[in-house]
Length: 212
Image (cartoon, rainbow, N blue to C red; front, top):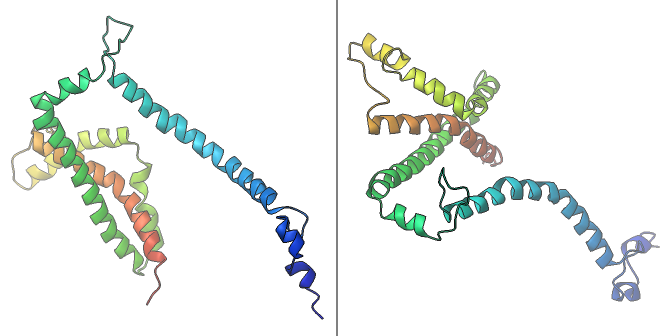
């Protein structure tokens, strides 16, 4: 009366032995699927180890050695490099604050601007597909090319930024000479490069939300 019983049910003795109706044991089936998973993950894990973990370990090893142009041995000196840099006033009061400022400002600016653009791109309007395509353009610009572009734009002699400033009647500005001004330009450049990434991530999340 139940023709599907042979397919959907297994004998209790078979289940006690760890077997399945198809003749494969649960343990062997698990090992087979686990082997397939490991084979699929192996290339990604190998790339991660070679290009992420290995350079980090090499950097840690280099930080524990003394490098010199005249000495090819690179002797091990332990934590002496860290001790020297942590006692350097230029590092503690200039380099470290600038690094944290750049990190927080660029990430916060990219996330806030990316969220605003993603909210705008979620709304229907004519040409939305074209705008979504163009918004990804900064991701295709290499950082080296972007730095050259910014250096030309903010050049104090023939840059576009000073051309606009002088057209408005203001004196030219040495954009890349003043420390804080040049740091802000670097932050704006990084925000410009990274904002499309945040737009894609946030927009993908917004698209999965139900309309209600």
